[in-house]
Image 1 (cartoon, rainbow, N blue to C red):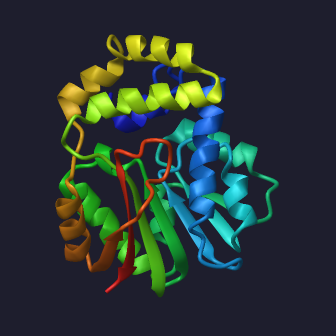
Image 2: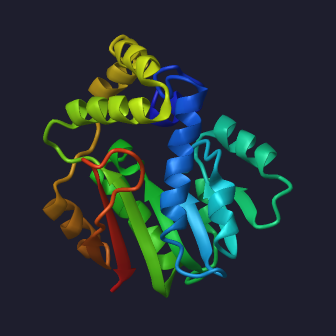
Image 3: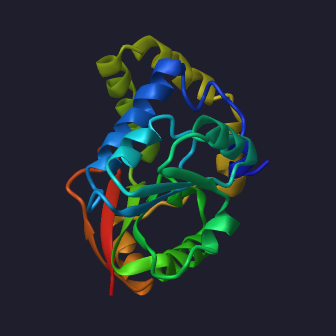
Length: 230
């Protein structure tokens, strides 16, 4: 099993219940929507997951492409949004065939931690090619190395308390200790970056980056970076 196959199936350790999943994606969609540069913008959400509230983003832009590597999740996205006139769903290979310089904003949220440094570099090179010269690359949910698991747990409990699933969150934290997630974490690892390291990596990929004041999503101990092509 790798990270893609892990997230391709429903687990109670990913979302502790339906309420958690729905407010999780709603929060992300609202935060991404706030970053859309113009009503006619072409937006790509790369590694979007279930993206149950993606229509909120589509309402604010010209077209939204959801890109997802996990085949079962991608099939569900295509079924869910098949009739939406401003949305399409692609695999990573399909997204890479998008015309150069045609996208206004690309979002990579909560994905970088599952990639090696080399994999992230290759992905950012693709994004640099696809973006318009005036486009924006949004790198979200970058995990710092210090106390990442502790802050993730505390942020989940706070999020649960604010949205009516606190005790389900407690149970979810217990379940994750005996789940495949920790096995994968040991075998495949997670990538962590300090602010300085993330900025340096973005600069090396040909971007002019800055850290955003607010991280996309509920965990404000993680970081989002906004970058323009250099």
